[in-house]
Image (cartoon, rainbow, N blue to C red; front, side, top):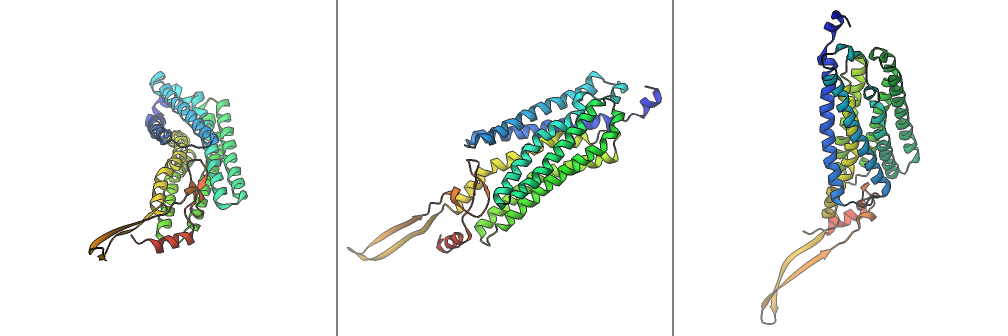
Length: 331
């Protein structure tokens, strides 16, 4: 490579984003790993299909974290100050979309299944499934084209396919988020207890989905507007881990939600310690403790959708029963 070409290379925008993406990806992987430990420590008795999904995305996350480290090592260590190496991409460079979708597609289908259970509308599952499989196919197509063209300069022709992949992925993620929020909002009862739980579920949904959608949009913008640099890798590297974080956040939130629902629905209505004084056998005051307990099985509730420890959805009490609860709550 000529000295002029060497001088034109901006290491900050070519190698720098790879290093940043690797560090951020490793950090998010650490967060996901802690959540996995929390999941198994909680002792959830989930269906084997859900456990298999968790094991699958964990394997993908471990592999992709290692591959991003190897990619950065290739440019920063093995080819330090070797400008010619920047014109080529190892297999870990082009294969990134494949392994991102190996995590995103099954997680998107899991979320689509949740929406179908909430809404009782099978066509919504089909709609999201088409978007998910479409973005997965486009990701594999762009990765295959990149693997067949080791030269970075030739990757310009891949940009339209990659743009279509990212746009479809954003459409799928936003559809999932909006549909979940819509059906959660429809479950509002007007009673403080149930609405507070719905609000918390909505907040969890937004907090888990927003980072994924934001990174996909930034990835799309950087790839389209600055294709000569690797700025899009800052977003592309950790996005797969964020899908895993979305799944684990949803699953691990069950315990805190269960405790909240137990405090609201599985109540001890303590009417209080009431001193019933009177002239009873010598005029002694008799203290009567009245403790009324209402046991409600969480798996049999029918209003707010979330997930029980068995992996099936459970619901809070219906609006009518909550109204009865509010009237009987003397505490």
